[in-house]
Image (tube, rainbow, N blue to C red; front, side, top):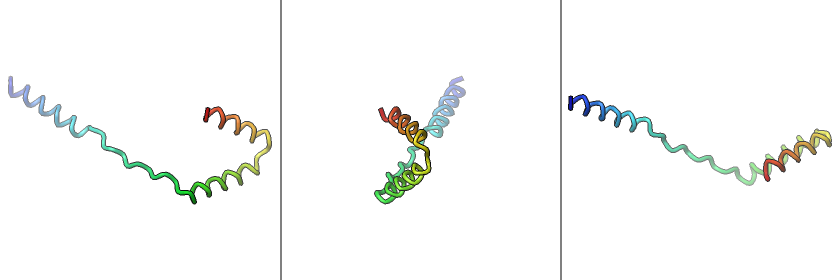
Length: 66
């Protein structure tokens, strides 16, 4: 009986070791050039929008930031 108990405990320990999460690699923050490119792209897309759509987008962004 002790052998079965010991085998069961070892099995549980081995399973728990394999199921532990690995640390995820962190993403690098965007560079200044990438940020300026993204801002230019956003400004280009904003020029094609109607004023109502721009107001709606701005209100939603403000709600998200606050």
